[in-house]
Amino acid sequence: FCTPCLQECLKPKKPVCGVCRSTLSAGSRALDLEKQIETTETTCNGCNKKMYLSKMRSHAASCPKYQSYIMEGVKAVTKEPLHNTRSFPNRFTFPCPYCSEKNFDQEGLVEHCKALHSMDAKQVVCPICASMPWGDPNYRSANFMEHLQRRHRFSYDTFVVSDYDADEDDMMAQVLMRSLRDK
Image 1 (cartoon, rainbow, N blue to C red):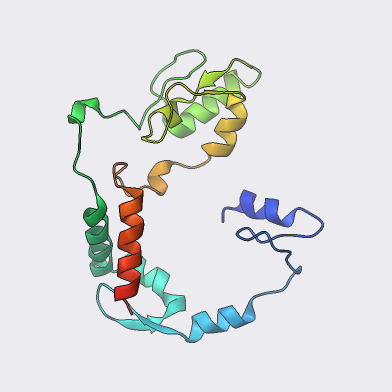
Image 2 (image 1 turned 180 degrees about the vertical axis):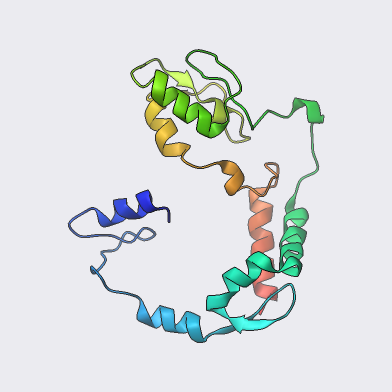
């Protein structure tokens, strides 16, 4: 969880879990889970090295064979491009929907709008969302500034492996198949 989202879960008088929303006991740690992570052995799917689960994340980040393993899974679910590459939307720079100033990256657009358009109540289309495959280029946000600050605090590139055309259902099926095959 990012800090702001985690803080929202801990704000109420009775803090709640960020996943299931059940009530949390203040200051209690999941000691049984921590112990299980520290004592359970696993094998890297890339290099077959054995290690404890607690070490797997840092190992996976530096293991080139594991990276190749992940990319094989991504390639297995990637659709063939249906369009000419010239018709792909630009997902790197965006125009301001208020004043049409161009070439803002996502962070720059957020900062520009906060600085110059924070009081503008005009309903506009979010150029970031409109450039995404799931985005509606005609949807006008009722409160664009709120939308920007909540929805675009991070870049989609952080979460999308560079292929916006990968089919999510195929990806989920691939993950399930791999999880059954993997030890």
